[in-house]
Length: 345
Ligand code: A3P
Image 1 (tube, helix red, strand yellow):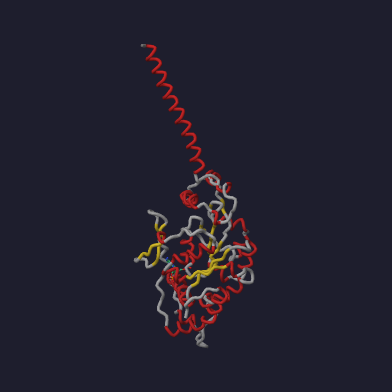
Image 2: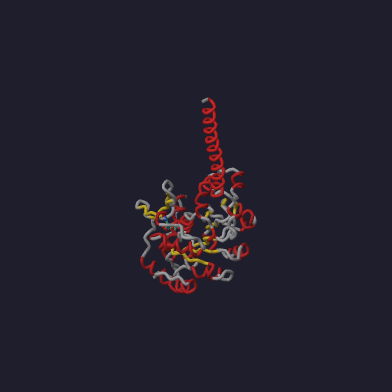
């Protein structure tokens, strides 16, 4: 009897032991699998090509949390090393145009999991003092990113500054260049409004737009006025074309980015060879703001700062017409060069 009970107990122990060993073996195998599935493993060892098309988007989305910590300065050096984070030179630059919607474009592109933005305007190529600091200084201004992400910066002064095309070419002759434009007269008024606001903040007076835009002696458009000159897009673009082929530029319709941003963003995704990831979910119209705002996820939304989307002063209609007529031939040339046509007057 006692012998039988002992045998039964031994049998039970054997079954339990086998179960325990089985469970341990299963867990070891499962953890191994999980480990392989963990997106935090070094991704370049699994992905031979550095091309953006190859980006494992789920991986990058997973890593966004860490990037957010990095931006807040909470990530440690160890995390940076462990996750292979690097400060990369931009593979695409929004070179202008000032008041075209450069901030909105950068922020909206940053919704893409494979894009990392340099938050500040770096002004490396247009500012001689910064440029003299060298390329490592510039790289040091870039955010941390995963090797297969692309960094984008925007400095709208690049578009109109003489020395910039050559300098950018020297850094990377195959860089992708984004230019966001608006109807030239509206852009000029927007430019004026920004300067006017700056003056008012300092309690300074400023001329009316009409006085600046029209030469009072000749009654012609004042081409010395910077807000007018900046809107002659073709003149600036032609300087760039001495260094870069037209295929390296993508023109974004800044007016459509305001009213219907998604199709414009999808064109940029295609230009940057990125899979289409920005969706209508990421963009919602905020009636109070009067603009589209950004939705990163269920908890994190943001609209652009109040300095974007100012109310423009009324401009004398005859001055508007004069400016529109002035810009017309330049616009035609711009369409011809870029292959993108707008319904500007
Ligand atoms: P206005 O202030 O004239 O309306 P930039 O960032 O290059 O300075 O451009 C500013 C312009 O971006 C603003 O010009 C605004 O119209 C435009 N813009 C485009 N999309 C916007 C958005 N979603 N929110 C706010 N402004 C936006």
